[in-house]
Image (cartoon, rainbow, N blue to C red; front, side, top):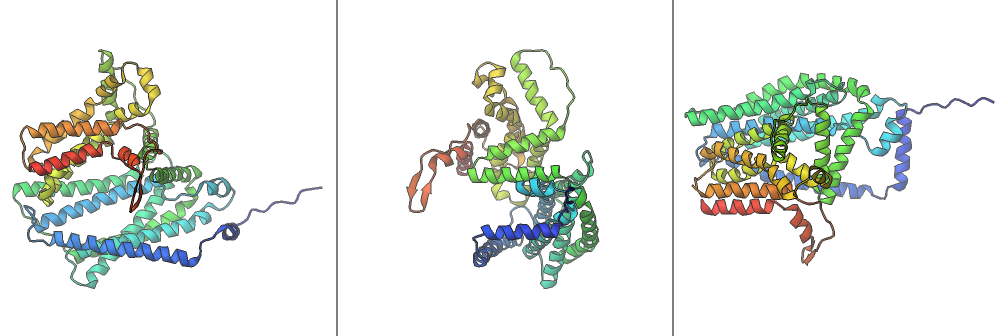
Length: 467
């Protein structure tokens, strides 16, 4: 007796079967879904309207400090370009196409048409990117010098074309072979463009040159004219790249998304930080080994911490970007330059605490290195402390009011805040709670989450009072 051949179901048949199965376990009505959608749209419109009004008041305010209208406009353009570069990196980090663990095991691993399975997700991704970026473009035009509905229409069209092109190209990058370098280029080009615009604005400000603000319609029309063909070509290439999106890339994006959701639910950022750190070091792959310079035990540990920065250059890039950001804030919004000076020093030093965080989260590593835990942590605090002091010295000219010797105490406080945040113990979710008229407040959990930030808040308040 011969066994009858088993036919592989089509993607359409598989979706119909899954839809029928979900309906048997689905207890949520259509009215509940529409109610949630209405509440979400209401919040987006309400808070979006407030942000648009605040941004328009800032850009058109006659009392903008030392920055004229042109400088404020171009700083916003630099921020948009940098934000687009970060969004590209975020899309590549998430996937952008991903599937659930069950679909990874039972659907993606099955001999079905990969393009037909991923095509609806690709369509939803591009449509969401078109709608979201079009709304952001229209909002940006409303903040700027938009005069009529035609300006808003051109801005929305430019945003939609850029959103579709970015989403589709990120799918092409997801399907690219390992080792290709071009997927990094769009993010580097966009963030580099934003940094270049910010440098030009800052240099023109201190040189006393006047910058005219960009006009909405010519700029958005040019972007839309270049973006529409790019969006069509990128969508075509993205649809063709769907069969090359393998199971490994889908799994990697799902792992990151799961870690992000888990960290948000459990209020434990270390869960997401661990995934990001492991992905970062796997991306480096291999390094060139070199011996340390002769010296004592603590000198070798300090060299290892410095070498970590050399092998992880994004920390130095972020440190430099925060320097440029402080100068841009001093030009565009000088009234808050003192507050951002303290916060920027904290963020810059925090990016240099990779060795201190790794040491604090690994008891086995501390036992293997030997010596007292305090001495080990202090030797790994040298790099963040030097980085904070150097960052403060570079940004002193645009740090608001000069406080003399008090600034030394502020830098020491920033280093203490960074040390306190980096050496935070594992989260404990069984602490005390306080009952209030607004519900239960997990006091102990909030105390753990604000470790380090509490010291930073005290420093910001002290800096505000002293100036």
